[in-house]
Length: 342
Image (cartoon, rainbow, N blue to C red; front, top):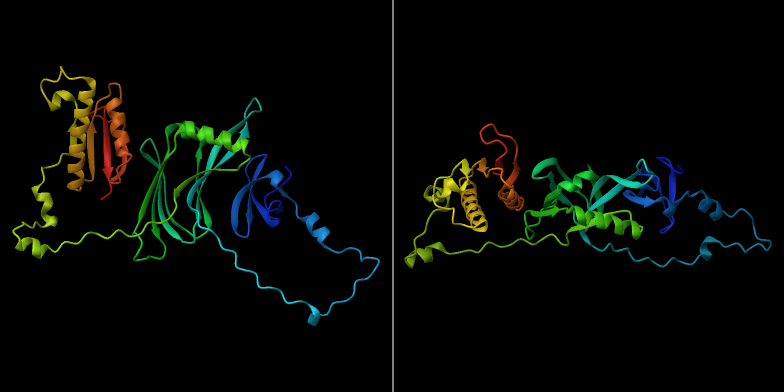
């Protein structure tokens, strides 16, 4: 191996010096330049000693140059400050390669970095899930124009369609900005494999996804003068007492058709599925309105179509903390338990 951890290096493209902080594989290393860490191919860096050697004036020219005194030096022109352009916040995946038994290059892991290319510092709550089950959680902050290492995931786990959820807020609160901003990313295996091939072809070190361009402004809630509405004869209700007018919620809902209606044999599969999903949506919304901690949906085993449809809906619901489809002594594998954020 040409380089070792701690070696000083020179970035050939920018002529900046840094050091090696991690050996990623036989072609790539993680380097640190002026406090910023990023991956680089070994043919993009070199040892800085040749540069330092050639910058030293080892021999004087035959014709001595005239001496220049301090008061003869021209004044340096003031250099304009370098302006960093905001490019949003990104999620970056760095593949770690290895060789298999046939000496073919394969990806073992994906190193995940949060990259902030804006001039604003953020706090964030990060949750990573596989098939709806939380695998990793983290609460932290990221500075302006910095990147933040999150964690690694096995590459074969991409087949489980991993999801990455962020809840951002400003490190320095701003009354004009939204109190928080949620972003959700789901990886599709086919797209990831294509991006890795494109990454190799273009000699790039990472695959990236933009989470957002700009942090959103605060949305003003519409204001209504309730006294004027009441004077015009409108009835005004106390929203805090709204739950007492709702239909009672259930902690367990059975979506088998024989539980929903008597004569359903004439219905098509599409009509049955539509009715089951409508019933699920009803009891889900009641559970949220009543602030239940959890809800069990019995969908049965069958072909798995109803279960999959429900799981896809749950992945989009911000009220859902997590959900799980595992063996239950009451329902076997035919139920999903939902846990809410309250």
